Length: 345
Ligand code: 5AD
Ligand code: FES
Image (tube, rainbow, N blue to C red; front, side, top):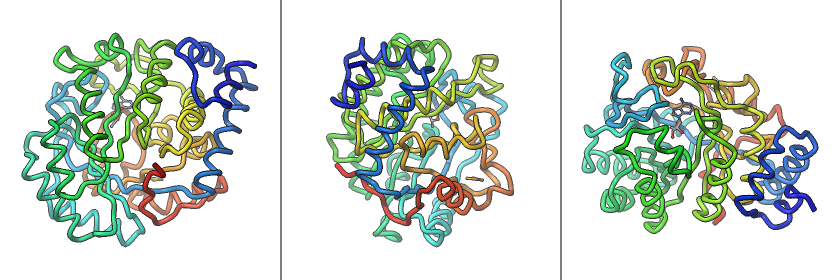
């Protein structure tokens, strides 16, 4: 049996076998067999349902300086903004009326939002929307902070590991950022009972097949409930401005691989995929993804949450991403549902 067949049968491969598999991503037969196995699994567990999360990008201040990111602290041209608790609650109110039952609070690592301020925001959302899931995506914090947020009412946490290779991690981040700490955060979050989302960029500068193999080994070990992956896209105010973007095809291939690796996982068809290809999110769903994360941020600030160039859904016309995604999801035979969409395990 070839490695693709072995993955489909065992839901796991060794590092060397992943390398073997990934070296074949351009082989249409391999890609097709993985895609079919992935879709079969997603239908077995989730039928034709696609879950939706309302993304509220509440601050673009960040104390970190990740080399790939448009809102890193070193970008003096970034126009910074913060949302007040009231503005965040307004986003939730609009979102709830549109059918969102999960709110994702995403932001840079912004010291203005102290643990107490953050906990207060979480408590307010929890009080007003007892039937909704609250997801945080605010970076690396201490065990105690994560515990406080959990007690305040948060249920889930997204923290992409970005790459599971120490070598590549160091090429993408300044020396003060450590992969070991990021991994520790993910394990802390799991032990506190959060549903956890990890993930990585595909085609980040310097990324090799071996690095992606390590991502897959790490994901199988961590067993996250969610995995967010998207192509790297250069931002003009970063040192990677002139680097090539990641491949949509390889991202889709990896989505299928991850669906087979973690059959019950929640896998978003990401905004980065939609940015690189007008049908990127639809293709993501066809490769095994089962979540979409439309933007619920105030239209006036969307342009400012500028992680990479040409990010979609930032104009006036994108005021209503939910309707847009509902149509897109239906166009590939799936159904956007108004449910919390908790992980199956
Ligand atoms: N291209 C693609 N994805 C990016 N992210 C940050 N910068 C970029 C970029 N230039 C992703 C990171 C982060 C998530 C919020 O956005 O993976 O975790
Ligand atoms: Fe935002 Fe289509 S999802 S405009």
